[in-house]
Amino acid sequence: MLQKVKVTDPGDTRILEGDVIHKNVFGDENEGLKGMVVVTENGDSKEVYLGQLMGKKELKEINAALKKKEKAVVKTREAMPATAEPVLLGITQTSLTTDSFISAASFQETTKVLTDASIKGKVDHLLGLKENVIIGQLIPAGTGLRKYKDLVVQNKHTFSEKPVAAAEVEAEVEEKVKA
Image (cartoon, rainbow, N blue to C red; front, top):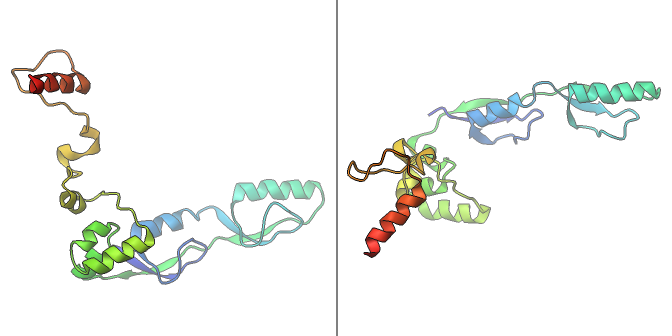
């Protein structure tokens, strides 16, 4: 399972050195640095501070305004992307490093995983199959997808040619149940 990477140099990203993160998150962080610069000297500008990440367009506007006033311009360098190396995880570690603490707790080290999740105030958004099965919800696959949430299924005896709203069908079912 080579889905995780260990950050060797965080560059100018928000990632910390030594973090083990999903390779897509790593890629997104580095992608966000494209076209960005880091302020090395703020010149006479009071709008920027040392180490600030900013877009090249914004920098040009600030420097143009400073040049008009004949003041020292902001000096920058290109933003440095993070570097990382792939991490090969066994099946146990793969299960424990998932974003879903419910899924991780169902595998091994249940007490440790649940304690860690409660201390960190984690929220499980129930995006995977396993955690939805554990809590007894529809799985996010096939007709269990959220886009089919309002789908109304009728048998051929109660089928009508005109579309029926879900609320109408529910009201009709409730009437039949009460009778």
